[in-house]
View (cartoon, rainbow, N blue to C red):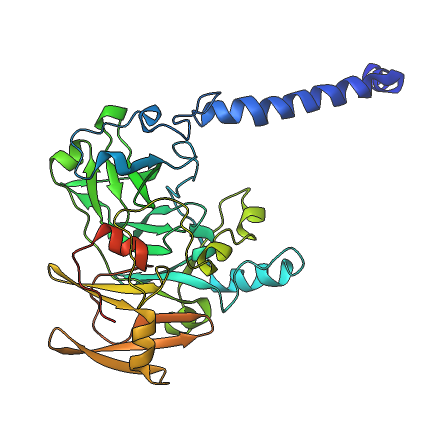
Length: 355
């Protein structure tokens, strides 16, 4: 011990400090990327589709409309084993992080899911940085998906073809909508899946005509969801992402009525509704009922709760004004999806839209 103190007094502490920083840098820039499988190797150059090494045979959509997003495969890290916190912990974080940006406020929107008596809230502000959460709620494997460029939210069962799939962000886009991929042992076995269509569009799963079962979800304010489900759990932030979550990268895009980040074909050009109008699509068997928010607001006629006839039954809705949300209200729980009009139309150009 005496020799150690003598060593440090003679300037050895500088050497020790240098060694510490060396190993810290080694861990951050070499060991962690190595463990994550990303050591100096990113699949996809952001420009050419072929660089992503996906199996595009067969391809059930026009292949030329699949484009690179500008990001590499997996650039948006999916939640593979989501962790959750209680509403009480949310309140504690809000009090603690007043200056740096609160975690989740009552007016923030969440994707609400309730299955088998278990309730979960997935903040949209968090999901926009990840696109997909591979979760299990009420014993059911689900994929909670959200694409910021389309403001599209959908929850699917992850069971398809007798297998439980795990999804990731592909780095590719089709009609301005993020393509997910199912993780497989070999790249040639992976398939690309449309987030809005809920089906495989390339690869082995496309050859087998695999689809995902769409489930019911709600986009509502966190405050409203908490009132409906006081025992809900809330998606926990991914470590190291707190600064990113404070940003709102899509807000300016939503308020620009005519600019699209990626090309679409066909493009909505009916002046009756702006192409970035929010819509709620309800799946009724094999048919869809697509309801734009402005039309639903007219039906509300100033009421918070209202109903309209759909497929021979009276379907209830709840209008939230701060923030603007429209969600089904009552016992009817059909599969639903939220999206911007242009994105929905590009993926389903033959489906009638009510307005």
